[in-house]
Image (cartoon, rainbow, N blue to C red; front, side, top):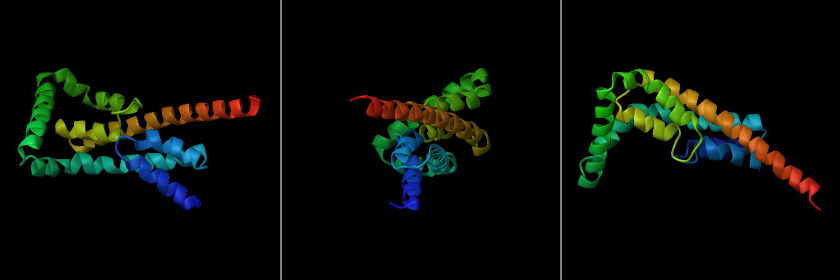
Length: 163
């Protein structure tokens, strides 16, 4: 497999919701990329969708909101998120920190896609939403990179020392 194909696979896996860079880094390393190469491809792939989700998901909500099952879910989530943010001035002051922490913890269901959707539900402008999300992706990437390196080292140790 060519190096370009390995880069592209890692890059595009980084763009996939749920997997994001949490899945792309181990896949890239498994394909034979260096840790740095896997991190960079995954990071870039993971941050590209952020702007588009934060900025343009609302028209999709409006489109799907025409159908009752989608409208009920979209209206409920949007109204609840908006009410919570408006109720608490403290929450408004810590929204960026909350987004950062939410995205930075590399667990299933947290990440750039969901963080961007939350920012959209909260009607945050891209200038306020994107920096903490990107910073969270960076921290999550470093954590996943460290865990991948540790797991890879442990697996290699086992294969080299188990008879």
